[in-house]
Each structure stands twice: as structure tokens, then as C-alpha cells.
Image (cartoon, rainbow, N blue to C red; front, side, top):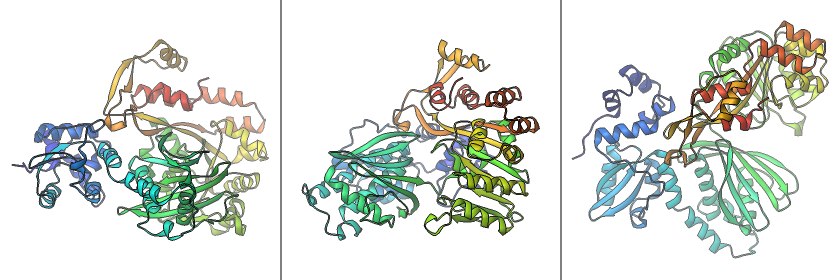
Length: 553
């Protein structure tokens, strides 16, 4: 007999959350979002805690599917679509019983559906959502499409039949969709198709690091490239010049936006797809991982009526997320917000966004010039790439506009030298700059397999050098939830330089960067390495991660 109890009641009973927190989450959660997912997303509890409560309260065993021997005949009983839609996977059958691993063992409608469609008695076990998704990817039919493709495409077949790359049920179309779907389920930020001499590698960037997902035979390369180009409305016949495009698709009722970039390499075109998560909760300043002091400094900066605020860092350091979060905070009925971007990544309600189009002469500089005639209060320039854009941005800020933009530099103080290097006069830099935010992304220690360790002597040395005392450090030992890496998700580390009167004087007098750095240090600026080490102390990340992205002086 299955005990029917509501998840919220179980969590309140076990003391993991309060009644108020439960009601608040029920109000805030998205339509059709499950309560458990909403609580995990908000960080009120971890997936492991949720599983432990269900295991204890309902008496359902929890299993890790990481190396579990799943029976092929059990897989054949439940259709792939049903399994994917409901986050479950059959693992074995014993007589009249079918054992099913479920992310939500309290979804009684799904259990009844399963019982009626399969004719088996359903025995539930609990597994983590990511664990189930990985098992589904491993056991459900990606390989069928691969085999179909290999049979259809004997070595050396030319790409002649266009229907093969456009019809929905053709193997190549299925394969591309499955690769994209796997990447999204594994929370990858980019998909790389790397052509080699004898093969084509598919790699996913997960939490900032690339890992090879699969290797495809070389003769599939042309069809795969053609398929992606068709999806992105690119020129199929052009393979000597780089091209950029965009794909918008719906995968299992979920809208997915992808930015596509092709680059001619010696063994064919390399393609990179950047996945833009439109349902991301990152558009909120409170979720960006600012420490209290930096949060206060940043919110004060963006409340100013004019000046330039620059966000700096390499590609993939979360600059766009911070920019959009700042725009979201500033977005109100009384304010005219205009952006000029290349490309427009996230479409925001109530903001006028302009897409750069160099082919017709709409560049950052010309777009910015036109924006200034549109009576804006806040202007966002996607990136300052050249002197012309930098100069117009500076002039815009001097004429009473707040300008937000990004720049590729290593740290906040190096940005000042970069602007003067671009040809902007030091007195203009000094007069217009309000603040500079440098940021990087580091991997977070997995909450489910986190363990505390004593600090090594070398680590102690690094911390003492920055004036921080530390006794213990957190590390993940590796579990099914984090794919045995010990890390899950990412968090930003920041360095915010507020340009005050003294720094303005130093810039105008062409003082060396070292002097400005010393003054900033005395003035309580938290550098990237400091913010990173403070996050290590809080148990959010590890010293290795911080040293991977920030320089220890």
C-alpha cells in the first residue's frame, strides 16, 4: 500500500524548512515547477537532503545509478519520452514487479500511469535527478541513431540528398537534437564540434571545464555541419569564412536559445554552440555571489545618475549575467534604458535592445551615437572594442548618462591602462569612470559530498599572505550528483574598484598602475584573490579553483 502524503508536509515535519518558507516557495515557484526543484533552486535544501527525507519518511530505498547494472529488458518496457518527461528510469524486473528509479517518488499519477501501461506492479526507488538523466542518456537511444547513421552513410558517401538533413525523423536531425538535449541536461554552457584528421570530437563545457562527450566518425562531419548551419540560417556553401548565427528550438516543451559560431580550421569547420539558458534565475543581483561589502559598493555604483561602470574579465566569466542583473535592477517605468549588443543574448521586458549589424554599417559606435538622440537615462554597450566606441561612451557619461559596458582585461586596475592605451585621454578617463568590476567564475564544492579537511601548510601560507586565518577547508569527495568531480555549479568572485577623487587625480597625473593598486589596497578594495579565498573559508569553493582563475601576488 502506497502512503500518500504531500512533500511540503514531510519537509516541515522533518524540520528541514519552516511553514513560512514552504508557503513562500509555493507562491514564488514557476507554473508546473515541482516543489522539490523550487526549494533546491532557491538553495533552501540540497538534493541529498531531499532524498534523505523521502528515504526516511517513506521507507523507499535510495540508490546511486553511477555504476548500477541496469537491465536492458527493463529499459525496453518504458518508452523513452515517458521516462524523460517524468525523470524516471526502469532498472530491473523481478516476476510481476518492475523496479523504477524516480526523482519524485511521490508523483502518484505517474506511478498509476506506469502500472496501467506496463501491467507490472511498480516498486519505487529514489535517485537524484542528474543521476537519472545521465542513465537515460546512456541507455536510451542515442546509440540507435548513431548506428542508423553509420548504416546510411557508408564511408565516403557524398552529401547529396538534402532531405537527410532537414526532415525531422532523419537520423542526422535526431542526432543533433540529442547532442543539444544532452548538453542542456548536463547543464553545459557550450558545445564544441572539433574536427580532427580522422574523427570529429563532441565536447561539452560543464562548470567552465571542457570534457569530451563522444567521438564521431570523420565522414559524418559534413552532414553534421550542414545540419547545424541550416538550423542557424547560415550559408551552407561557405566554408572558408567564419560565420555567426542563432538557433531557437523547442526541446521537450522547453525553449532553447543557442548562439552558433563557425570557424574554418585545417580539418574542416569547428563549430561552437553557446547555450543561453533563458529560464536562468541569474538575472537577480542577489544571486550573483557578491560578498556584503562588494554588493553594497556595486548597488551604490549603479544608482549613480551618470558615469561609466565597466565589467571586465575573459570570455565566459559571467560578465553578461552581471550586466543583465544590473539592468534588471535599474529597469523601471521612469527610466529609459537602451542597449546596443552583439548579439542580443537575453531579451528583457521594458528595455530597448539594439542588435549590431556590421553588414549595414550599424556598429557599436554608430548605434551608440544614435542612442544618445533617444533621450536615454541608462545606456548599455555590449562591449567596448575600439577607440571610437570608448570615446563616445566616455562623452555619453560626461553628458549625464549612466553607461554600463564590458571590457576584456585581467583585473580592475589594468582597465585604466587599457582605456588610455585605446587612445582615450587620461583626463577623460578620470572624469567619466565611476567604478570597475573584475570577475571570474569558480566551481562550487558539491553540497552533497562536501567534507571538511585540515589546511595544508602551503594553503596556510597563501591565506596568511592575504591576512586571512584559516583552520579547515571544504572539498567534495565525488558522488553521483556531481559526476564524481567534487564540484557542482559555479559562483562568481569579484573585485570592485570604486574610482574616488584621489584615484581620479592619480589617473590625470599619469601615475603608475602600481601606485594606484597600493592606494586601492589601503582603501579596502577586495581583490579577486581575496574574495576567492574568503569564499574558500566559507566552504563554497577550493583554493585550487581560486588559484586557477586569480593571480596570487
